[in-house]
Image 1 (cartoon, rainbow, N blue to C red):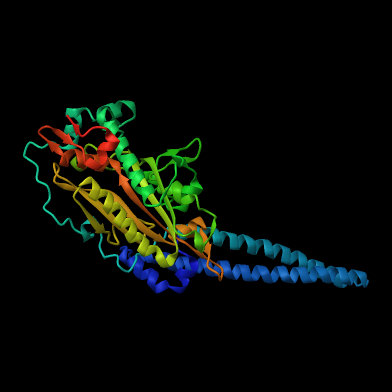
Image 2 (image 1 turned 90 degrees about the horizontal axis):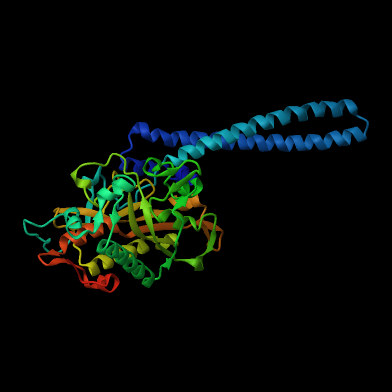
Length: 425
C-alpha cells in the first residue's frame, strides 16, 4: 500500500495518479478521508502522551505529599490521576479506532501509475511497446485450433477434467503431458541460467501472505479459499516467493535478489465464458514459471527492462510471434506502478493471447511486507518486481496451432532435448 507520508506530502501527485486510473471525484474523496483519519490519530496520540505525562507527574507528587503529611493535597491529586487514567483509556481507544479505519482505507487505494503509463479505460487503450516485426504466420484453411489438435493427438482432455474436478481443469496426457513438463523445465533452466534462485514454495498461503502482495482485499473473489483452514490457493508463485522477505531488513549489498519458481496456479476466473475462453485460453488451473526480483529503488526500472529482455529471449527461442503492450491506467493491476504484457499470436485462432505480465510495484508491496534495506542513513523500502516466464497454457495453445503441419506438430528445436521427440503425430 502507499506510504501515509507519501499521500500527505505528494497529495497532488496521488490524485493525478488516481485520475489516470479513472477515479471519479467521488472516488477521490478517499484521500481526504485518509488524511482526516490520520489527523485524528495524531491528535489523539498527542493528547494521550500529554495525559500520560501529567498522570506520571501527579502520581509522583502524591507520594511526595503523603510523605510530607499533606493528605488533602495528595487526595486531590489522586482524584485527578483517576480522571487522567479514564481519559487515557478513551484517547487510546479513539486512536486505535482511527488507526484501524485508516489501515482499511489505505488497503483500498491502488498504486500510483508510473509517469510513462498511458491514459485509458480498458485493454483497448493499451499501447504497443514492441510490435512483431515480421509477417504473422498464416495457416491453411483446414488448420485446427488447439482444442481440436488435442483431440486428434490425445494431448489433453477437458471433458475428463470436468469429470474429475469441473470446468477449466484440463488433464494432460501422453505427449501433451511430456510437452508441459518440457516447457516447465526449459523455463526453469532459462531462469536459473540468468541467475535466479529456484524455489519450490507452498501452493497455499495464509491471509497475511496474500494481503502482503496485494491479493487481499483486491483479488479475493478470484482466489480459491479453504475455509476450514483459512488458507488460499495461490493465483501465482509471486505470492509465496515475494513473502519470503516479509519483515526482513536487507543490506544494500544483498541486491538484486532474484527468485524463480514453478507452481500450478489457481484462479476462479469468475464470469469468464464464450468462444474466447475455449480450450486452454482460460482455465482455472494452469502451470507457470514466475520470476521475482527485489531491487534497490534506484535500479528497479533498469531491472524491469532486463526482465522484459529475459521473457523476450525465451519467446524468441520458442519461435513464437509476440508483441509487448504497455498497459494503460484503466487496465493495470491494483498493485502495479507499471506493467508490460506479452502476447503471442495464435495462428489458427488468428488472435493474440496474453502469456506474461511483467510489473514493477515500486514500494507498494514492500510497504505491506515491511521489506526494508539499510542505506547508511537508516532504512528504506525496497522495490519489488515480478513477471511470468512463462504461463504455460496459452504457450501450449500457440505452439500446437502455429507448428501444425500435414505430418504432425513440430516441436521447437530448443524443446526437443526436454521432450525426447521432435514431432507429435
